[in-house]
Amino acid sequence: MDAAEPTGIALLGATGSIGASSLDVIARHMDRYRVVALSAHRDVAAMERLCRRFRPALVAMADPHAAAALRRQISDLSDTAVAEGAAGQTAVATHAEAQTVIAGIVGAAGLAPCLAAVEAGRRVLIANKEALVVAGSLIMNAARRSGAVLLPIDSEHNGLFQCLPARPGQPLSLAGVERLVLTASGGPFRDRDPATLSEVTVAEACAHPNWSMGRKISVDSATMMNKGLEVIEACRFFGLPADQVEVVVHPQSYVHALVQYRDGSTLAQMGNPDMRTPIANALAWPERVAAGVAPLDLVGAGRLDFAAPDDQRFPCLALARAALKAGRGATAALNGANEVAVAEFLRGGLRYDRIAGVIEETLAARPAEPDDTLEALIGHEQWARRQTTESLQRGRHR
Ligand SMILES: NC(=O)c1ccc[n+]([C@@H]2O[C@H](COP(=O)([O-])OP(=O)(O)OC[C@H]3O[C@@H](n4cnc5c(N)ncnc54)[C@H](OP(=O)(O)O)[C@@H]3O)[C@@H](O)[C@H]2O)c1
Image 1 (tube, protein in one colour):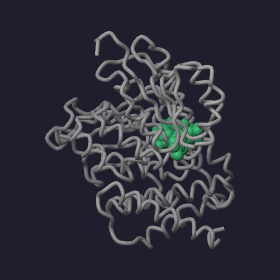
Image 2 (cartoon, protein in one colour):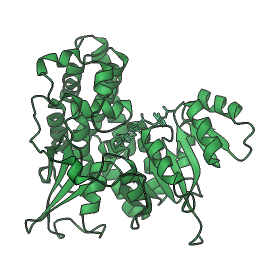
Image 3 (tube, rainbow, N blue to C red):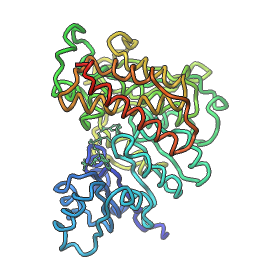
Protein backbone atom coordinates (compact mmCIF):
# COMPACT_ATOMS: atom_id res chain seq x y z
CA MET A 1 0.00 0.00 0.00
CA ASP A 2 1.20 3.53 -0.75
CA ALA A 3 2.47 5.14 2.49
CA ALA A 4 0.31 8.21 1.89
CA GLU A 5 -2.87 6.22 1.27
CA PRO A 6 -5.42 6.35 4.15
CA THR A 7 -5.69 3.19 6.25
CA GLY A 8 -8.86 1.25 5.46
CA ILE A 9 -11.04 0.70 8.55
CA ALA A 10 -13.68 -1.96 9.13
CA LEU A 11 -15.88 -1.18 12.13
CA LEU A 12 -17.88 -3.97 13.77
CA GLY A 13 -20.69 -2.60 15.95
CA ALA A 14 -20.71 0.74 14.13
CA THR A 15 -24.08 1.91 15.52
CA GLY A 16 -23.10 1.50 19.18
CA SER A 17 -21.27 3.63 21.70
CA ILE A 18 -17.79 2.36 20.73
CA GLY A 19 -18.82 2.75 17.08
CA ALA A 20 -19.77 6.40 17.64
CA SER A 21 -16.54 7.19 19.51
CA SER A 22 -14.47 5.44 16.81
CA LEU A 23 -16.18 7.31 13.98
CA ASP A 24 -15.74 10.59 15.84
CA VAL A 25 -11.96 10.02 15.97
CA ILE A 26 -11.83 8.77 12.37
CA ALA A 27 -13.79 11.80 11.12
CA ARG A 28 -11.12 14.08 12.60
CA HIS A 29 -8.47 12.38 10.44
CA MET A 30 -10.00 11.56 7.08
CA ASP A 31 -6.55 12.09 5.54
CA ARG A 32 -5.27 9.09 7.56
CA TYR A 33 -8.32 6.80 7.74
CA ARG A 34 -11.00 5.67 5.32
CA VAL A 35 -14.12 3.77 6.41
CA VAL A 36 -14.47 0.78 4.08
CA ALA A 37 -16.88 -1.52 5.96
CA LEU A 38 -19.41 -1.19 8.80
CA SER A 39 -21.54 -3.69 10.69
CA ALA A 40 -24.46 -3.64 13.14
CA HIS A 41 -27.28 -5.85 14.34
CA ARG A 42 -30.56 -4.20 13.30
CA ASP A 43 -30.50 -0.42 13.76
CA VAL A 44 -31.37 0.48 10.17
CA ALA A 45 -31.89 4.22 10.70
CA ALA A 46 -28.50 4.66 12.39
CA MET A 47 -26.76 2.59 9.73
CA GLU A 48 -28.38 4.56 6.93
CA ARG A 49 -27.01 7.79 8.44
CA LEU A 50 -23.52 6.26 8.64
CA CYS A 51 -23.70 5.01 5.03
CA ARG A 52 -24.63 8.47 3.77
CA ARG A 53 -21.86 10.09 5.79
CA PHE A 54 -18.96 7.65 5.32
CA ARG A 55 -19.87 5.87 2.03
CA PRO A 56 -18.43 2.43 2.95
CA ALA A 57 -18.04 -0.21 0.24
CA LEU A 58 -19.76 -2.82 2.43
CA VAL A 59 -22.21 -2.78 5.32
CA ALA A 60 -23.60 -5.80 7.13
CA MET A 61 -26.69 -6.16 9.31
CA ALA A 62 -26.78 -9.37 11.38
CA ASP A 63 -30.58 -9.40 11.16
CA PRO A 64 -31.66 -10.31 7.59
CA HIS A 65 -34.88 -8.24 7.86
CA ALA A 66 -32.82 -5.20 8.82
CA ALA A 67 -30.48 -5.90 5.90
CA ALA A 68 -33.44 -5.99 3.50
CA ALA A 69 -34.79 -2.72 4.92
CA LEU A 70 -31.38 -1.07 4.64
CA ARG A 71 -31.04 -2.21 1.02
CA ARG A 72 -34.29 -0.40 0.27
CA GLN A 73 -33.29 2.71 2.22
CA ILE A 74 -29.93 3.17 0.49
CA SER A 75 -30.82 1.90 -2.98
CA ASP A 76 -29.51 5.24 -4.33
CA LEU A 77 -26.00 4.54 -2.95
CA SER A 78 -24.74 2.32 -5.75
CA ASP A 79 -21.22 1.94 -4.26
CA THR A 80 -22.40 0.42 -0.96
CA ALA A 81 -23.23 -3.30 -0.84
CA VAL A 82 -25.40 -4.68 1.99
CA ALA A 83 -24.65 -8.13 3.46
CA GLU A 84 -26.56 -10.03 6.14
CA GLY A 85 -26.35 -12.70 8.83
CA ALA A 86 -23.17 -14.12 10.35
CA ALA A 87 -21.50 -14.29 6.94
CA GLY A 88 -22.02 -10.56 6.53
CA GLN A 89 -20.25 -9.83 9.85
CA THR A 90 -17.31 -11.98 8.75
CA ALA A 91 -17.20 -10.24 5.37
CA VAL A 92 -16.87 -6.88 7.13
CA ALA A 93 -14.22 -8.27 9.52
CA THR A 94 -12.10 -9.59 6.64
CA HIS A 95 -12.78 -6.94 3.99
CA ALA A 96 -9.83 -6.88 1.57
CA GLU A 97 -9.43 -3.09 1.78
CA ALA A 98 -9.44 -2.93 5.59
CA GLN A 99 -6.03 -3.00 7.23
CA THR A 100 -7.51 -2.19 10.65
CA VAL A 101 -10.61 -3.76 12.21
CA ILE A 102 -12.35 -2.32 15.26
CA ALA A 103 -14.15 -5.05 17.24
CA GLY A 104 -16.98 -3.04 18.85
CA ILE A 105 -19.88 -5.53 18.91
CA VAL A 106 -21.35 -6.11 22.36
CA GLY A 107 -21.35 -9.63 23.79
CA ALA A 108 -20.26 -13.06 22.57
CA ALA A 109 -21.93 -12.28 19.22
CA GLY A 110 -18.71 -10.40 18.45
CA LEU A 111 -16.45 -13.40 18.92
CA ALA A 112 -16.62 -15.03 15.46
CA PRO A 113 -16.05 -11.81 13.46
CA CYS A 114 -13.27 -10.73 15.84
CA LEU A 115 -11.55 -14.10 15.43
CA ALA A 116 -11.98 -13.92 11.64
CA ALA A 117 -10.21 -10.54 11.58
CA VAL A 118 -7.39 -11.94 13.72
CA GLU A 119 -7.03 -15.02 11.52
CA ALA A 120 -6.89 -12.74 8.48
CA GLY A 121 -3.84 -11.04 10.02
CA ARG A 122 -5.40 -7.59 10.41
CA ARG A 123 -4.54 -5.00 13.02
CA VAL A 124 -7.44 -5.61 15.41
CA LEU A 125 -8.55 -3.04 18.00
CA ILE A 126 -10.50 -4.98 20.63
CA ALA A 127 -13.29 -3.38 22.66
CA ASN A 128 -15.39 -6.55 22.64
CA LYS A 129 -14.12 -7.97 25.95
CA GLU A 130 -16.63 -10.85 25.88
CA ALA A 131 -14.70 -12.34 22.91
CA LEU A 132 -11.56 -12.59 25.06
CA VAL A 133 -13.53 -13.89 28.04
CA VAL A 134 -15.09 -16.70 25.99
CA ALA A 135 -12.14 -17.61 23.77
CA GLY A 136 -9.08 -15.62 24.85
CA SER A 137 -6.44 -18.26 24.21
CA LEU A 138 -7.89 -19.04 20.75
CA ILE A 139 -7.69 -15.37 19.80
CA MET A 140 -4.16 -14.88 21.16
CA ASN A 141 -2.91 -18.10 19.50
CA ALA A 142 -4.54 -17.13 16.20
CA ALA A 143 -2.74 -13.76 16.36
CA ARG A 144 0.60 -15.50 16.89
CA ARG A 145 -0.06 -17.67 13.82
CA SER A 146 -1.38 -14.93 11.50
CA GLY A 147 0.85 -12.08 12.67
CA ALA A 148 -2.21 -9.95 13.52
CA VAL A 149 -1.39 -7.01 15.79
CA LEU A 150 -3.92 -6.86 18.64
CA LEU A 151 -4.41 -3.57 20.45
CA PRO A 152 -6.78 -3.14 23.41
CA ILE A 153 -9.23 -0.25 23.41
CA ASP A 154 -11.01 -1.13 26.62
CA SER A 155 -9.79 1.94 28.54
CA GLU A 156 -8.09 0.05 31.39
CA HIS A 157 -6.30 -2.37 29.06
CA ASN A 158 -5.27 0.41 26.75
CA GLY A 159 -3.95 2.23 29.84
CA LEU A 160 -1.93 -0.88 30.78
CA PHE A 161 -0.69 -1.16 27.21
CA GLN A 162 0.55 2.42 27.38
CA CYS A 163 2.40 1.78 30.66
CA LEU A 164 4.06 -1.45 29.46
CA PRO A 165 7.32 -1.66 27.53
CA ALA A 166 6.74 -1.37 23.77
CA ARG A 167 8.06 -4.84 23.04
CA PRO A 168 5.04 -6.95 22.16
CA GLY A 169 5.53 -10.66 22.72
CA GLN A 170 8.12 -10.34 25.49
CA PRO A 171 6.99 -12.12 28.70
CA LEU A 172 6.08 -9.41 31.21
CA SER A 173 8.16 -11.08 33.95
CA LEU A 174 11.27 -10.45 31.83
CA ALA A 175 10.28 -6.80 31.59
CA GLY A 176 10.23 -6.58 35.40
CA VAL A 177 6.44 -6.33 35.67
CA GLU A 178 5.11 -7.48 39.06
CA ARG A 179 1.46 -6.50 38.92
CA LEU A 180 -1.21 -4.92 36.74
CA VAL A 181 -3.82 -2.75 38.45
CA LEU A 182 -7.22 -1.99 36.92
CA THR A 183 -9.24 0.83 38.38
CA ALA A 184 -13.01 0.66 38.82
CA SER A 185 -15.24 3.66 39.40
CA GLY A 186 -17.57 1.63 41.63
CA GLY A 187 -20.45 2.56 39.30
CA PRO A 188 -23.73 4.19 40.34
CA PHE A 189 -24.21 2.06 43.50
CA ARG A 190 -20.81 2.44 45.17
CA ASP A 191 -22.34 4.20 48.16
CA ARG A 192 -25.97 3.09 47.94
CA ASP A 193 -27.50 1.41 50.97
CA PRO A 194 -27.23 -2.35 50.16
CA ALA A 195 -30.71 -2.85 51.64
CA THR A 196 -32.16 -0.85 48.73
CA LEU A 197 -30.38 -2.70 45.90
CA SER A 198 -33.54 -4.80 45.42
CA GLU A 199 -35.30 -1.63 44.20
CA VAL A 200 -32.73 -0.62 41.58
CA THR A 201 -34.38 0.43 38.31
CA VAL A 202 -33.02 -0.06 34.79
CA ALA A 203 -32.58 3.70 34.40
CA GLU A 204 -30.55 3.88 37.63
CA ALA A 205 -28.34 0.94 36.65
CA CYS A 206 -27.66 2.44 33.20
CA ALA A 207 -26.77 5.89 34.56
CA HIS A 208 -23.02 5.53 35.01
CA PRO A 209 -21.56 8.48 36.94
CA ASN A 210 -18.44 8.95 34.74
CA TRP A 211 -18.74 7.05 31.44
CA SER A 212 -21.35 7.14 28.68
CA MET A 213 -21.71 3.58 27.35
CA GLY A 214 -24.11 1.00 25.93
CA ARG A 215 -26.76 -0.51 28.23
CA LYS A 216 -25.21 -3.95 28.74
CA ILE A 217 -21.78 -2.67 29.80
CA SER A 218 -23.46 -0.02 31.96
CA VAL A 219 -25.29 -2.72 33.95
CA ASP A 220 -22.05 -4.76 34.09
CA SER A 221 -20.34 -1.68 35.54
CA ALA A 222 -23.06 -1.30 38.17
CA THR A 223 -22.68 -4.95 39.28
CA MET A 224 -18.91 -4.79 38.77
CA MET A 225 -19.12 -7.86 36.54
CA ASN A 226 -17.50 -5.52 34.04
CA LYS A 227 -14.38 -5.37 36.22
CA GLY A 228 -14.48 -9.15 36.61
CA LEU A 229 -14.65 -9.56 32.82
CA GLU A 230 -11.77 -7.09 32.56
CA VAL A 231 -9.60 -9.06 34.99
CA ILE A 232 -10.14 -12.11 32.76
CA GLU A 233 -9.49 -10.00 29.66
CA ALA A 234 -6.22 -8.65 31.16
CA CYS A 235 -4.96 -12.12 32.11
CA ARG A 236 -5.69 -13.45 28.62
CA PHE A 237 -4.42 -10.41 26.74
CA PHE A 238 -1.21 -9.84 28.71
CA GLY A 239 -0.53 -13.49 29.65
CA LEU A 240 -0.42 -13.06 33.43
CA PRO A 241 -1.97 -15.20 36.20
CA ALA A 242 -4.97 -13.87 38.13
CA ASP A 243 -2.99 -13.07 41.29
CA GLN A 244 -0.95 -10.51 39.34
CA VAL A 245 -4.01 -8.53 38.28
CA GLU A 246 -5.54 -6.36 40.98
CA VAL A 247 -8.64 -4.16 41.10
CA VAL A 248 -8.76 -0.84 42.95
CA VAL A 249 -11.83 1.37 43.27
CA HIS A 250 -11.12 4.91 42.07
CA PRO A 251 -14.37 6.92 41.94
CA GLN A 252 -13.04 9.81 39.83
CA SER A 253 -12.06 7.58 36.82
CA TYR A 254 -9.04 9.72 35.95
CA VAL A 255 -6.48 6.95 36.55
CA HIS A 256 -7.45 4.07 34.25
CA ALA A 257 -4.73 1.54 34.99
CA LEU A 258 -1.34 1.14 36.65
CA VAL A 259 1.65 -1.15 36.12
CA GLN A 260 3.86 -1.96 39.08
CA TYR A 261 7.48 -2.90 38.39
CA ARG A 262 9.98 -4.94 40.36
CA ASP A 263 12.06 -1.86 41.25
CA GLY A 264 9.18 -0.21 43.13
CA SER A 265 8.04 2.01 40.23
CA THR A 266 4.33 2.32 39.53
CA LEU A 267 3.36 3.82 36.17
CA ALA A 268 -0.20 5.09 35.77
CA GLN A 269 -2.16 6.08 32.66
CA MET A 270 -4.49 9.00 33.27
CA GLY A 271 -6.97 11.01 31.27
CA ASN A 272 -10.54 12.21 31.19
CA PRO A 273 -13.04 9.33 31.00
CA ASP A 274 -13.66 9.42 27.25
CA MET A 275 -13.31 6.35 25.02
CA ARG A 276 -11.96 8.46 22.18
CA THR A 277 -8.56 8.54 23.93
CA PRO A 278 -7.91 4.77 23.96
CA ILE A 279 -9.45 4.45 20.49
CA ALA A 280 -7.17 7.18 19.06
CA ASN A 281 -4.20 5.63 20.83
CA ALA A 282 -4.81 2.22 19.27
CA LEU A 283 -5.76 3.58 15.84
CA ALA A 284 -2.57 5.61 15.48
CA TRP A 285 -0.15 3.43 17.50
CA PRO A 286 2.81 3.86 17.68
CA GLU A 287 2.05 7.44 16.69
CA ARG A 288 -0.38 9.77 18.46
CA VAL A 289 -3.29 11.68 16.94
CA ALA A 290 -5.75 14.20 18.39
CA ALA A 291 -8.88 12.56 19.83
CA GLY A 292 -10.97 15.65 20.58
CA VAL A 293 -10.48 15.00 24.31
CA ALA A 294 -9.40 17.83 26.61
CA PRO A 295 -6.23 17.19 28.60
CA LEU A 296 -6.73 16.27 32.22
CA ASP A 297 -6.96 19.30 34.51
CA LEU A 298 -5.17 18.02 37.60
CA VAL A 299 -5.87 21.08 39.71
CA GLY A 300 -9.53 20.97 38.69
CA ALA A 301 -9.64 17.25 39.50
CA GLY A 302 -8.38 18.14 42.97
CA ARG A 303 -8.17 14.74 44.58
CA LEU A 304 -7.81 11.12 43.59
CA ASP A 305 -9.30 8.50 45.92
CA PHE A 306 -8.53 4.77 45.99
CA ALA A 307 -10.15 1.96 47.96
CA ALA A 308 -10.36 -1.84 47.95
CA PRO A 309 -13.49 -3.23 46.25
CA ASP A 310 -16.32 -4.33 48.56
CA ASP A 311 -16.87 -8.04 47.79
CA GLN A 312 -20.20 -8.13 49.64
CA ARG A 313 -21.66 -5.27 47.64
CA PHE A 314 -20.18 -6.56 44.36
CA PRO A 315 -20.36 -10.40 44.41
CA CYS A 316 -19.95 -10.55 40.60
CA LEU A 317 -16.29 -9.62 40.90
CA ALA A 318 -15.59 -12.66 43.09
CA LEU A 319 -17.67 -14.86 40.72
CA ALA A 320 -15.49 -13.76 37.79
CA ARG A 321 -12.27 -14.40 39.72
CA ALA A 322 -13.49 -17.87 40.70
CA ALA A 323 -14.39 -18.62 37.07
CA LEU A 324 -10.94 -17.49 35.93
CA LYS A 325 -9.38 -19.88 38.42
CA ALA A 326 -11.65 -22.73 37.29
CA GLY A 327 -10.65 -22.39 33.61
CA ARG A 328 -11.84 -21.57 30.11
CA GLY A 329 -15.19 -23.43 30.38
CA ALA A 330 -16.12 -21.50 33.52
CA THR A 331 -15.27 -18.13 31.97
CA ALA A 332 -17.28 -18.98 28.84
CA ALA A 333 -20.22 -20.03 31.04
CA LEU A 334 -19.84 -16.92 33.22
CA ASN A 335 -20.20 -14.78 30.13
CA GLY A 336 -23.24 -16.63 28.79
CA ALA A 337 -25.02 -16.58 32.14
CA ASN A 338 -24.25 -12.91 32.66
CA GLU A 339 -25.50 -11.90 29.19
CA VAL A 340 -28.81 -13.68 29.77
CA ALA A 341 -29.24 -12.35 33.31
CA VAL A 342 -28.44 -8.76 32.31
CA ALA A 343 -30.78 -8.94 29.29
CA GLU A 344 -33.55 -10.19 31.60
CA PHE A 345 -32.89 -7.38 34.06
CA LEU A 346 -33.00 -4.83 31.20
CA ARG A 347 -36.31 -6.40 30.08
CA GLY A 348 -37.73 -5.92 33.57
CA GLY A 349 -37.96 -9.65 34.42
CA LEU A 350 -35.18 -9.93 37.01
CA ARG A 351 -34.35 -7.93 40.09
CA TYR A 352 -30.96 -6.21 40.03
CA ASP A 353 -29.83 -7.81 43.30
CA ARG A 354 -30.59 -11.30 41.94
CA ILE A 355 -28.24 -11.09 38.93
CA ALA A 356 -25.22 -12.54 40.79
CA GLY A 357 -27.23 -15.44 42.25
CA VAL A 358 -28.56 -16.46 38.85
CA ILE A 359 -25.04 -16.57 37.39
CA GLU A 360 -23.69 -18.48 40.39
CA GLU A 361 -26.40 -21.13 40.03
CA THR A 362 -25.51 -21.70 36.37
CA LEU A 363 -21.79 -21.95 37.14
CA ALA A 364 -22.49 -24.53 39.85
CA ALA A 365 -24.27 -26.78 37.32
CA ARG A 366 -21.53 -26.72 34.67
CA PRO A 367 -20.85 -29.87 32.64
CA ALA A 368 -17.33 -31.14 31.85
CA GLU A 369 -14.59 -28.76 30.72
CA PRO A 370 -14.84 -28.03 26.95
CA ASP A 371 -11.94 -28.45 24.52
CA ASP A 372 -10.08 -25.31 23.50
CA THR A 373 -11.84 -25.04 20.14
CA LEU A 374 -14.23 -22.37 18.92
CA GLU A 375 -17.09 -24.86 18.56
CA ALA A 376 -16.61 -26.31 22.06
CA LEU A 377 -16.30 -22.92 23.75
CA ILE A 378 -19.31 -21.47 21.95
CA GLY A 379 -21.19 -24.69 22.79
CA HIS A 380 -20.34 -24.26 26.47
CA GLU A 381 -21.34 -20.60 26.40
CA GLN A 382 -24.65 -21.54 24.77
CA TRP A 383 -25.26 -24.26 27.33
CA ALA A 384 -24.90 -21.56 30.01
CA ARG A 385 -27.40 -19.36 28.16
CA ARG A 386 -29.97 -22.19 28.00
CA GLN A 387 -29.38 -23.17 31.63
CA THR A 388 -29.80 -19.55 32.80
CA THR A 389 -32.88 -19.02 30.64
CA GLU A 390 -34.49 -22.18 32.08
CA SER A 391 -33.65 -21.12 35.61
CA LEU A 392 -35.22 -17.70 34.97
CA GLN A 393 -38.30 -19.34 33.44
CA ARG A 394 -38.72 -21.46 36.55
CA GLY A 395 -39.13 -18.07 38.20
CA ARG A 396 -37.19 -18.80 41.35
CA HIS A 397 -35.31 -15.52 41.13
CA ARG A 398 -38.16 -13.04 40.95
N1 LIG B 1 -19.14 1.82 25.45
C1 LIG B 1 -17.98 1.91 26.05
O1 LIG B 1 -17.58 3.00 26.47
C2 LIG B 1 -17.10 0.70 26.19
C3 LIG B 1 -15.90 0.79 26.91
C4 LIG B 1 -15.07 -0.31 26.98
C5 LIG B 1 -15.44 -1.50 26.38
N2 LIG B 1 -16.62 -1.59 25.72
C6 LIG B 1 -17.00 -2.85 25.11
O2 LIG B 1 -17.27 -2.60 23.73
C7 LIG B 1 -18.33 -3.45 23.28
C8 LIG B 1 -19.44 -2.58 22.70
O3 LIG B 1 -20.02 -1.84 23.74
P1 LIG B 1 -20.99 -0.60 23.46
O4 LIG B 1 -21.15 0.09 24.75
O5 LIG B 1 -20.51 0.16 22.27
O6 LIG B 1 -22.35 -1.37 23.10
P2 LIG B 1 -23.67 -0.78 22.38
O7 LIG B 1 -23.68 0.70 22.46
O8 LIG B 1 -24.80 -1.54 22.92
O9 LIG B 1 -23.43 -1.16 20.83
C9 LIG B 1 -23.36 -2.50 20.45
C10 LIG B 1 -23.09 -2.61 18.97
O10 LIG B 1 -23.05 -4.01 18.64
C11 LIG B 1 -24.04 -4.28 17.63
N3 LIG B 1 -24.56 -5.63 17.86
C12 LIG B 1 -25.29 -6.06 18.91
N4 LIG B 1 -25.61 -7.37 18.76
C13 LIG B 1 -25.06 -7.75 17.58
C14 LIG B 1 -25.06 -8.96 16.84
N5 LIG B 1 -25.70 -10.07 17.30
N6 LIG B 1 -24.41 -9.00 15.66
C15 LIG B 1 -23.79 -7.89 15.17
N7 LIG B 1 -23.76 -6.70 15.82
C16 LIG B 1 -24.39 -6.64 17.00
C17 LIG B 1 -25.09 -3.21 17.82
O11 LIG B 1 -25.88 -3.07 16.64
P3 LIG B 1 -27.39 -2.42 16.73
O12 LIG B 1 -27.19 -0.98 17.11
O13 LIG B 1 -27.93 -2.60 15.36
O14 LIG B 1 -28.12 -3.20 17.79
C18 LIG B 1 -24.19 -2.00 18.10
O15 LIG B 1 -23.63 -1.52 16.90
C19 LIG B 1 -18.76 -4.29 24.49
O16 LIG B 1 -18.09 -5.50 24.47
C20 LIG B 1 -18.28 -3.47 25.68
O17 LIG B 1 -18.01 -4.25 26.81
C21 LIG B 1 -17.46 -0.51 25.61
